[in-house]
Image (cartoon, rainbow, N blue to C red; front, side, top):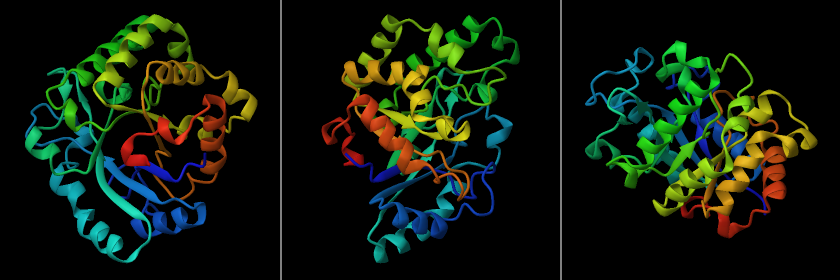
Length: 268
């Protein structure tokens, strides 16, 4: 199976992306890679939800929706299907997803991470490691059980703690299979997909052999065992982050034995 989609792309509307991260540039890259579907998922926090993290001060719906006319125009002339989505955020204050149902309905898909701990978790939770793990487990459960869970397309880079000051695989290795199975069974039952995000492997230039031994692969296999459907994402914040996309997605497909039937409907 060849992966022909990427549902985790940030344009320059995400304040952490660079100036090359434009829709036109990504369309060009998608054509070279033979992608048939791409999703624009800029960072987002609903301004109707109080307690916004300062990172999200301007990244509300009006901000991320600026790209909607550009997407519509491109869809009218391109063979590639482009989706308007977002990467929303977990709100630890209210233990919920930072989007209202009214706003959620305006997106074509929504990604939500439990692993943006560099933005949402108190710094003192980095150690001992179990505090960090418990925070992500609680966040995952709150996301799956949220009143807006029916709008969530996929959990973005699950348990892959972003900007972690130590090797994030330490945390994944500490989480027992039974815990993952319990969480992923709930995920599958809710019809929420599991994102296979290649960014970590790309960033550290992991070889096929290293990927095969990575803690992420154990987690991904457990998600598959529990019946989760998958989507793939590059987590691109610039035009340089697709250089190994085809190679890495194919490695995941082979190592997990994925078939078309394992993909979420939106990704087929």
